[in-house]
Length: 275
Image (tube, rainbow, N blue to C red; front, side, top):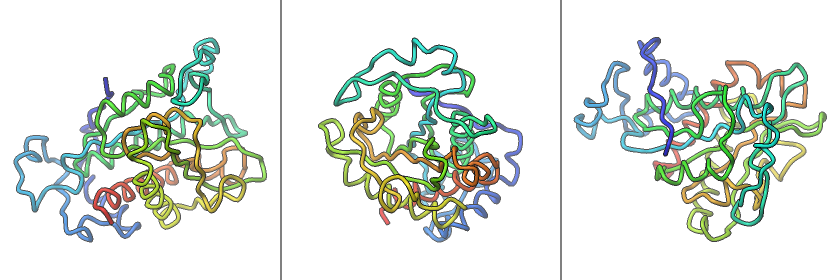
């Protein structure tokens, strides 16, 4: 069963205007797409009944978000170590994720970006499905996360992570799937979505292309359940290296997390518009 969170009422006033300003940085405003954002006070019924010309750009779309790991994963090593089938081989259910030198965890970063992205997507008319409902839980395992999004029939999904690479390394990397059967039909579309994410991150965030992982900010991976088992276009984004002091100083900042979320929202709009 997919996990959905309702948008909070507090702070919704002027939310559409703020989101439009943020997406304007990416060059993907609703106006640029020939589409208009609805007021922040619009109801679900209004969205369904609105004429096509006034519907927000993601109306009727289901978008999947997988914030990697979970805040309490470290409390149950036995759960994390039990084996799951990732589509090619057996691997561990999950890990704790990495953390910055000051103790700021990857799980927390992933969750914060996911919440900012979810809020942006909801304002743009999408129905958002998440693989976990808080940063105060355990799991689910990586294969179950893939199935949650597959069962939701999402139009596109993104797995949000930060890397624990060498201290000297900096930058983001887009991880893309390799054909293995279940995901064969979405390899080309995932690569196109990856290019949209890559361009949006460069254009709208302070994060740069990785200088230590992959090539030019891309790498193909055939050993990750989230990519092996996907039935929709999907990439996993390592937003930066939490072991690198300069990257970590950016990744822990709420303003940078919001810019990453806005870039991902812009990439999703561009991808679904077929540009």
